[in-house]
Amino acid sequence: MAKPLFTTHTGMVDILPGEVEKWQQLELLIRDTARRFHFREIRTPIMEQTELIARGVGQLTDIVSKEMFAFDRGDDHYVLRPEGTAPVSRAYIEHNLKQRGGTQQLFYIGPMFRAERPQKGRQRQFHQFGAEIIGSPNPAADVDVIAFMMDVYRQVGIRNFTLKINSVGDPESRQRYKEVLQDYLHPNLSKLSKVSQQRFETNPMRILDSKEEQDRPIVEDAPVITDYLNEECLEHFDLVKRYLAGLGITYEVDPRLVRGLDYYTKTAFELISPDLGGQDALGAGGRYDLLIEELGGPSTPAVGFAAGIERLFIACDALGIELGSEPAVDVYLVTIGEKARNWALSHLHEFRQKGLSCTMDYAGRSIKAQMKDANRENARFSIIIGDNELETGEFTLRDMEKSEERNLSLDQIHKLIAPVM
Ligand code: AMP
Image (cartoon, rainbow, N blue to C red; front, side, top):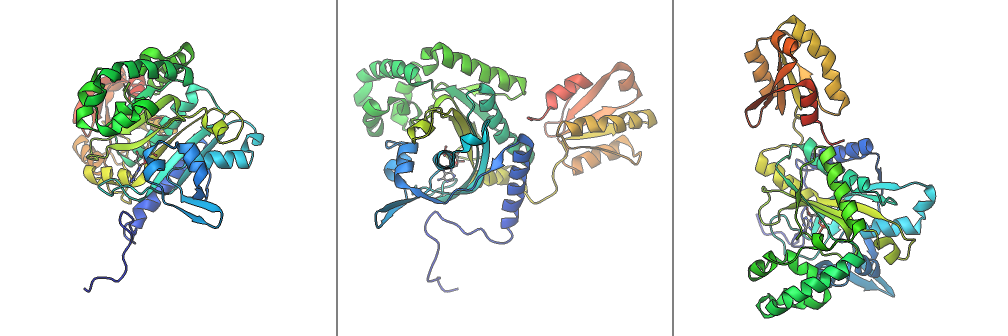
């Protein structure tokens, strides 16, 4: 075939029929998650005023300083939006959404644009889904957006990830920490990479997440912000951790996670996957209590996340998950005998009501046939139920992926496999 006269720009891709179906399925799944978590969709234009992004995202960030697709037309300065939080905040202020009362729980799905060097997991037009809770200072809101994000991956079948969390404090804590950090870094300044040297004065915290090899050993022993948080920030962080644990969400505290944007306050988080290669963040977010005021609105606490759809698909490919195929079953009840079958029938709904998909064998087949069926249905867990189990109240819970079995009470099983809700 002759070389086409026109092609897409570098880092921008067509999504063709055959592939678009998996996008549709994911979008349905995200919308359904939003419905369950009670977030409402917002759609903002793909172009914004350049000044909004510069102020919102921060002049010193890579996004604003070198990755904006921006142009002028007459007196107007246009930019293709590189992210969703500043546009959603703008809309919140412009339409006075505060007047609608209560907190606003909003989500979006759509294309974003950054003039980055394209590579695996990094495009110039890419897509994000994200959610924001605007108007609540409560740490429960932080946990709610994290739970929303993780629920999407859970439903897709991606479970191989690490949630990293940190607190980047408030301006007061940060100022204290900034000074301590600069004092620590100063003697090593000449050993730091050029980029980090440039950040020393303006944004030394960004040095902590430097990808430059030569910065690593210096950064490793640096003081950590969590030691300089004031009481309010500490308490907030403690509650976030406690609420996460309450939902059964495991996390790692990473005191070097800073996320680079000036507007972040208190909670910052990132969801990291080992299946992505170099660009290993599936999604990320944090609290931004100062942003709305910075953009000219009333002082309004808020928290949100954004996650990359292309990266979600890369993780799916690595894990052999085919979206558009039959959804996996969370729990398969394997029964031995009539009594167990009746018991299972009445307990099936307990799992379903907790948001898990749960099924069982209705045909009275052998255990072997039932296990085979559970495998075919891609079940995450099976629970084996017989007369003995009903008598003792202890059941065998089998993790089908890991082929591990544990004997547990029904209560323990519910706790262990409770989905994030
Ligand atoms: P950020 O807005 O930079 O915090 O990014 C949030 C998420 O969006 C990341 O974790 C990625 O999954 C995704 N993302 C960011 N930049 C790109 C890009 N250039 N190409 C593809 N995905 C991206």
